[in-house]
Image (cartoon, rainbow, N blue to C red; front, side, top):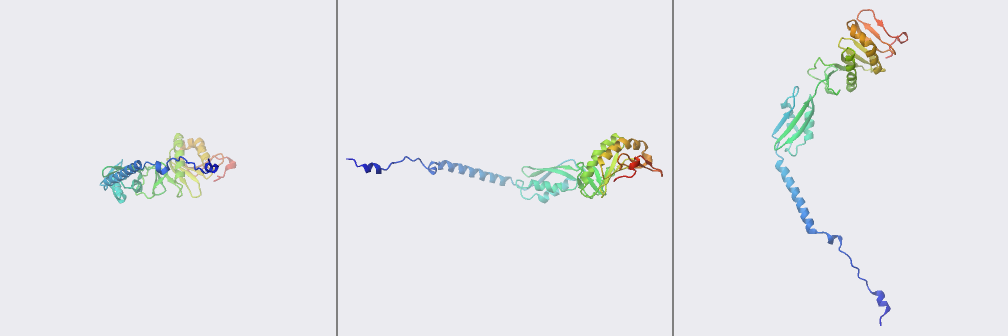
Length: 265
């Protein structure tokens, strides 16, 4: 005879798979970890073996203002440790702080040398009394021992170097086409602009509508200046429609319309 409650109390056995830890191939994992540790140790030993002291500095470039010994001395100041551990950015930064260095590229040359390629600054203009600007309009030398007199003279308040250089770059080619050569640009403390031409004539552009006044000078006054420069001291473009000329003699010729007889700044 079968009792009914025995069927109800019978335990059912479930077929459970292996756990996550049981499924891990610990032998293979140990081999992988050992290989990784071996590679790391080998890399460390290789770095230590190659990290020899820097013995030589190979300096390359076309030099006029900077000397290779000056570059080498700058490298020695910051090339601490061995060749593998030397901070190339720090070395480059120290080199680029040298006067007349525009930029430098520093690389390793195994087993014990640093290669330095230097590009010098090219002076494109004088700035105020003793400063020099490069072709990007950047003041790279504030107190130069020698300022080439043949360079154009750009003048202005501190911080205005880029703005003054930009006006010079915008105007020089157009003025040459008009038959005159630009040799200087001045921005005063009030924000007024003045150009100086190679023939000694000064062009007053003032503070307002400077681009329009430059256009008007090239179109209207430029031909007159090109023909009669020896008689002209300045040209004043600070008028709404016209301009006035300051002659070297006592007389002056006013070309501005009557209603614009006073320059507007």
